[in-house]
Amino acid sequence: MNNYFVILAAGKSRRFHRNYKKQFHNYKNKEIIDHSVEKSLNSKLFNKILIVTDNLNYLKKKKYPKSITIIKGGKERSDSSLKALKYLKKFKPKNVLIHDAARPNFSIKLLKKIIKNLKTNKAVVPIMSPNDSIKYKIKNQIFNLKKNDSLLTQTPQAFRFNELYNLATKQKNHISDEATLFINQNYKIKFIKGEKQNNKITYFNDIEISKTYYGIGFDIHRLVKNKKLYLGGIEIPFHSGLDGHSDGDVILHAITDAILGATRRMDIGTYFPNNKKFKNIRSPKMLKPVIENLYKSNFSINNLDINLICEKPRVSKYRKNIINSISKLINLKKNLINLKGKTVEKLGLIGKEKAIACEVIISITKYD
Ligand code: ZN
Image (cartoon, rainbow, N blue to C red; front, side, top):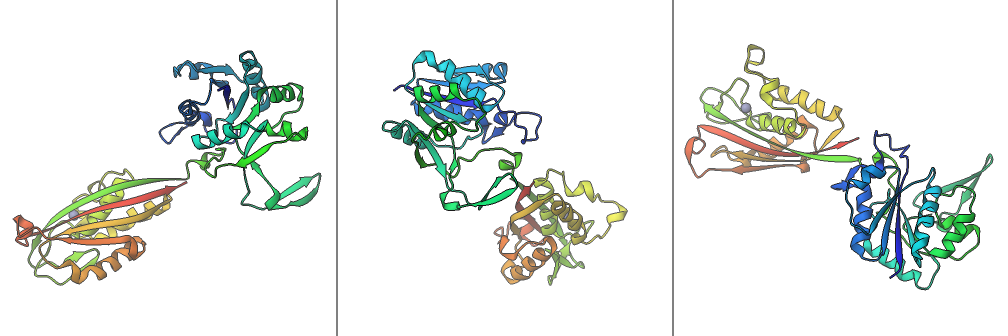
């Protein structure tokens, strides 16, 4: 084993539009750079791992294992890469892999495949075929590039150290990857299949496309004579209705609370206190502003699951109508709503048909 792994992490993150660099953004429970650090360490394929960065002090505080060395980066990517090669020369490496910290999703399997191919090749570069059609601009003329003949190069890119060192030290222009040096000299590169997930994180949206949240809601109301029973926004024929400051619709109240919970906006009582203004209010009216706010804030509902806890009425008899009503009220497809009826073995107030309770869980996703 005489392999060295270089992680280039001196990028300025100009297109990331955050007040910190993307390589230090928390992604899948660790900083983006640490995905590359941990995978290269765990692969046990490398004598040394070299991180090139402008944030020396910050990274030194992380107390990486001894096989990791941190050096200061250069102005552009190719300057940092050259600095790494010059630093490594004294170790007389046979092979060197150069990797961009902005690609946290490569696999150890890919590392092994690259190293294996290096045995019989001087340069190994993972590639993907583009999904989009590509045009090429020379001065003011646009040319079509044949999609099937176009290659997108990924990192890590692997090289015989001496060959790469000789080319890199003679290079005068800035280059976007090391493969360019070999291609410019017409040197042979072994291209191997890269990994779809090994894409480069450039924009914040590349990683923060959506976030999913969950909320629960619970409600219970007493059943009283001479009141209409409303469940899920519709009237259900029954000997009693639900008592309360409003129409007592336990399903809609629990849904409203679940949404408020998922969006971390406290509870239904905060917005609809028991005062004169809301006396006898119908529950769809309480749900409406909460739903409107949800959709206005770029959330969408994934699904809604409801437990209606009562001895009677029988849920199976009204399930379709209740789901239809909820579907309209919250603008959600019927097949994403589930309503279960639970009896309580005639126990307690609910068992004696003196109360009805409801619990709801909702999943919502925010799209930025
Ligand atoms: Zn209620």
